[in-house]
Length: 634
Image 1 (cartoon, rainbow, N blue to C red):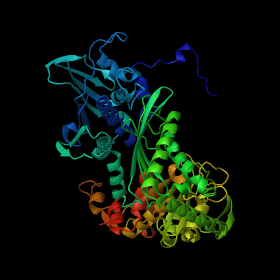
Image 2 (image 1 turned 90 degrees about the vertical axis):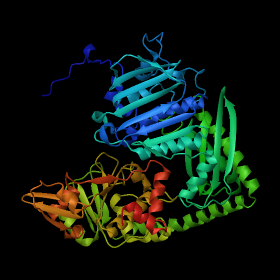
Image 3 (image 1 turned 60 degrees about the vertical axis):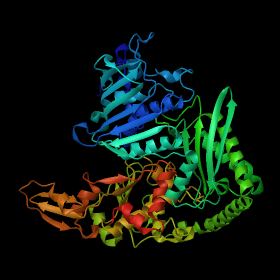
Image 4 (image 1 turned 90 degrees about the horizontal axis):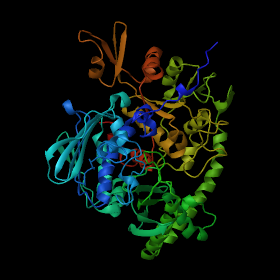
């Protein structure tokens, strides 16, 4: 019989300093992976940007090291006012120490210091400090230079005076803590992407980046107009009219809120929004995007009352920047804006922009309405085609009616079931022998499926392989405005056989050759376009298939090249290395090891916003050279 844990006064733990951040890092940064690691740098960058917004910083420089003794060191420098270093009267210690060590303390709480700011919770650089192996800060202020060093959030020195200094500013150097983030390295490209955003939104701020001592160009001045223009050019998306820019300011409950908006209807699919608040990217949008969307309905729905709202927005692309004195965000990573007042101001800005667009382009309104009505007619046709989903060649099995060619895992639950999609009957037979029949299922696909990005929806819905996938997963389709009665909802336990859970997976097991990679990309395009909810639930994976296998004595290793295989053996080993002729040519033992067992390597398909989904559209678009480059096919 288990002993009951004692619960008394001693059970209540009081965390001191930054212990809470290290104990529960996920509460303070996005995660302990690449996104959380990037956030450490973004928090420091955002402080410099806030100084610029307040009118006290003209230069921001970021230095990154990816090799040598300084590997994974990041340095952020600005010429702002410099963090105060004198003794804080309430805390009884240097203000510099307070800024980096005391949660919910900072200049953003003082209305006189910053009119708008990306960080108002007083966490920011404290999280960077707490989750860094070391952090060193140098301040130039009042003609003097000061320095303090921290290790894992704990001050290792006091504030030292280093002597005289010219100008003012703050320099923060840190290295993330491998105890928190594991073996992840700093990604200079991710930092560069953030700096490019800053450069667009703050054209008067000089932004510099150096990687291992080499300058990397990040200059993207021109504001929202240039940002939208470059975005459309990068996606090869044609605008139906000249993009419209408006700036709208309004006072709501005593707060002055400013909205900048640049928008255009394009030949693209669906509506897409790039949202910023106080120079901070909010990938999930928020209340302001709700305001933009409702404005489209407000202006156009009276002339097309029976047309779904999303059809009126089809092809609409908007870039917005809101300056809000008191923003509320979803999570510390600022995924979305939550302020209700922002919706009202954003709605007014979009109404102004739409009217401006219609005035400059007299035929635009009719073109939008005609397109929306055509989409509605297409939907009516597709509703009839959905009957095909229910007429697929099925047979009764333990958990309902499933595709005849599905090798079922009879003991699996929606929380641990893994459905493997494999290429061809030969690989399907080997995979069926190699799998764990208690939780892993195998569905063999025959031939190449249609390109879900470019093919007409009726061709996709009539394809037997896609229909078999829908049935095996246990839901219909979604993401294009159509769905069966239940749609594609991973939370719907009644139909979805692979529910949301830490172990539920849909695994793409394709050959490592160009044909296999092409089929994998076709399937990824299908999931993104038609079954996106299962992607957003983190259920879609691609198995990292090897090209070569080496055997020496009782040891077997796999890799993408002969060199990669050899590197895994001792120097004196002479393994027998062969090229795999697809998964059908592998033995069940080999396949079980690299595709179904603990040693398997796989990549999760992650879509954080519509820009990620557009990568798949680019992957499957007309230009095959782009597809080959993204897939690594030479």
